[in-house]
Amino acid sequence: MNHPHPMTTSAVTALRGLIRDKGYDLHREQLRRIFSADIFHRSAQVSPHERAALTYQRMRHISDGLAARGPLVEDRTRLRAVLEWSALADPPLFYAMFLHHFATVGAVLDFGRERDDLEGPLAELASLRSIGALCMTEAGRGNSNIAVRTQAVYDPASRQFVLSTPDAAAVKFPSNVGVDGLSRLCIVTAQLIVGGKERGQFCFLVRLRNEVGPAAGVRIVPKSPTQPLALDCASVSFDAVRLPFSSWLSDSASLSESGEFHDPLEQDQRVRRTVSIMRFSWESAITALAGITRASASLAVQHAHRRRTSGPMAADLPVIRYRNQQRALFSALAGGYVAGFIAKNLPAVPLTAQHDEGALRQTYLMKVLVDRLAERVTARSRTACGAHGFYGENRFLDYQVLAHSFNAAAADNQILLLDAAYALLVGGDYTPPVDDVVSAVGRSLTEPALWSALARSRERRLFEALTSSLTEVPGHEGDLFAFWNSRLAPAEELAEAHAARLAAESVQASVESVTDPDLRRCLQQLCAIHFLEEIAVHDGWYLSEGLLSAQEVRHIPALLDELCQQVAPHALGLCEALDVPFEAVGAPMSRPDHAYADALQPFGSPL
Image 1 (tube, helix red, strand yellow):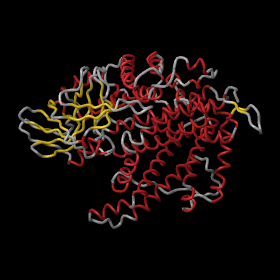
Image 2 (cartoon, one colour):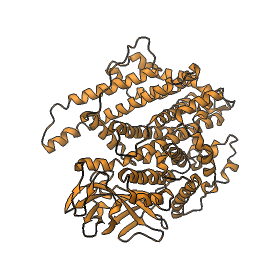
Image 3 (cartoon, one colour):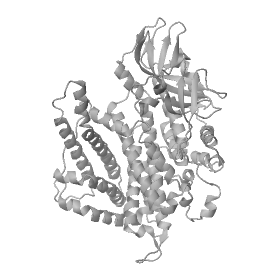
């Protein structure tokens, strides 16, 4: 099994084109030079403070190497590539990068568009003379950002805002601003107060600190880093901090010198508009999570071809020959392709307010789906590699932590699912899909069209079941809570089904776009492993709805074994087509010679 894979160069290139943005190759050599520098070598001899500071040294190294002339967020293909390499090389670096380029610069471009007075701060951020961050979540609100209590009170006499933290529950936490010696320009969300009245939640661009220390009235309390995601988390509070009028990212609202406030949006619309800043985080999360999913699967499958074992039934065989290893690893490999297709097919999130609610909903649902997929694939890949998988240098643990962190980061997954379900039920931009599953006679569960059809039927029927229970909504607040509380589980299930259908259709389109019939069959067989496992999770529901027969359900395990046998000869070629930049991964077990003693020498232990 250590022989070269039979997949042709043209086939590898064709598959690679399904997961790579056009133009990616223009940046590949530049990224290789940037990420091969000594600053990315890992050393054990650092303190937590030095480790956190290294993140920002690496950020500036990347910025210098890219030599971008303007905001990187305006060159989305390039930024996606940089974020992927950053996540593979150093997950804390990825966090700092997306919070700077997307959450900070993106917010300024969005909420402060066409404003000359923001050109200076934008240039400062683009050059990394100041580093951005997001102060949004408050300690007393967990992951709910729709009712922040930080206040920005307008002072008409000075035409300034006074930023204050009213109590301990309103302290901003966590924010990655704990490292000393850096200038930080951060996005702070606060309730705007004009004339003693709350006017809605807005973003403010605030200089939290310079190279010497925090700005006057700003209190930053660093927290102990959470290993291995060693971010410089801190709590941030404000004591009557004076902000210039230009710090208000007013969006479509206005405030005259006499204190007359106008906003075309109602306050509930305004808070949703402000919280939409998270849409930039969803795109970057999908990019990073798809990258670590592909890397974990490729690393583990290649290792399984080299890792040899002996047992009572066979001597000196590569572990990839064992069917239980194939089931785990080819499922992971299929997950790498599914995540790659989703990331590639996802439209870039717009930088302006002119965005489609349905498209945004699709983006955050794909964040949830790819995050769960990344957790599963990184865990399976690590487990399949035995002791080498647990060894930190080989990155599986780093990637698992990154995937796990996005359960809550960039908005809590469960909250996103429930928000999506509510929009599907009451919004005006959604039509449930057609229930069009074909007869069981003569069909095959390995057909992409059937994966999509089953997903459509499940979504449609879950939607109808839930809406049929909503005919008499109570008017009393207490009764209304009880009413919705009893329906949260089916609502979440509906949103999951909607996301699964979107993913199935995306994968179907990718598979069917392959023109070479042999290559299309190979890719279809691989992806069928993923979708058969997904179908098996709900096989009882499909049986009860008459969408699957008992014979089909019983046949799934044998069909998975058959698919593994068909995929096995092409596994190494499929790994190569995932196009993982192992220069960024830096895992010793990615080296074909498996020479651990030499491979470990420049790395030490993971940072």
